[in-house]
Length: 440
Image (cartoon, rainbow, N blue to C red; front, side):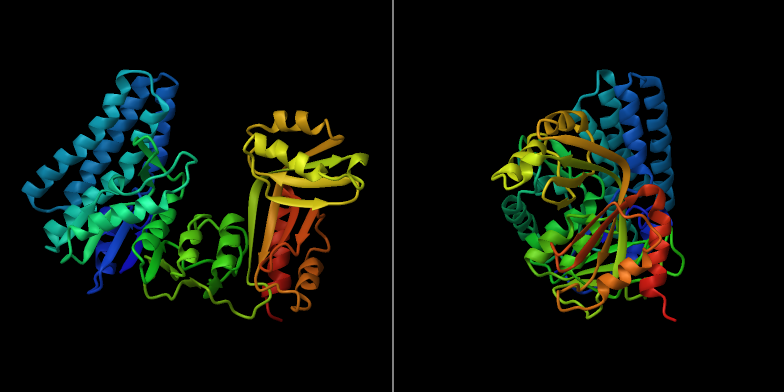
């Protein structure tokens, strides 16, 4: 069993869907996980925002534009008139769910229903094409029948494994299954989701639940690159990464991969392969338990950080000081990204400023508090074991002209984290590319 996930760009048009249908041809049993067509989730988010604002007229107009787009895709994808008519009926049913929510004030649960329609629509049309045009036997597995999160909004792995197995057992002779990424049920049984980028996470959870031999993530990029190709010229795809290295890169800004998507695969030791639908012959990136010898393989950057510095004479030899300080962040359910300490100060970063003012007010009880906004973490990832000589020297030598706010090194054998002002991010990434990856 293999799990193949295709992102929004990969299924962004009738032409792209036909190309994906060719890529999934195999004699091996496989589950195909689809995102919404590109642009759809953004459109649905905008429709929900308009409804929250009470602008039903604009929301209706935008929904109708989106509906007409899907009707056009259905007509382009399905040449048989009877098949088109049936598909349009199903597409209209999906949009009726959105129009029905416009009759009253939008609730949080109603918003989740709206956001779920993108994946339901893409899998509906793709399944119709595979079965009606290509004549293949394919089963449309509703993700809402087996994907579930618990009350902490974490995937319920035991539930997913049990209910996916029940679904698959109904079709012992079928080789091809199509399902939705991103969407799930919550602990109360309502429609929910795995947040932005969650289709990758869906694929990894499904792969783990099905004991897959491999999980493939198909996007429009040839694997994870050694630096941000949007900022730096001359980047190249990394051919092999360990699970830990990939997780670090995903968390610290490598947009090709959802930060949580490596975890279920790592727990079950299932290789993850990142591939390009536009260049299917390219080798992409293989993520597994193995790693190469390179001390630094890649660089990623994460924006939107807030740096907080707490200075207090109470820290000196104070038992329990750090625990009390961290409890402030736990109280407001705000994760800490990076931390450094000295005898009299703690510096740390957060990427969620929702409760920043409350956090700062509580921290002032410990001492003097300073805040720096618009910060960026630059993460250097590789095989940075202590016996590796020269990696840090090369990195910091490349950054000799860039002001550094914080440095974290040694907490992980795969990561050096450096905090810089966001205004210095591009300069830092280019300097690291020149100093670490460009051969003389």
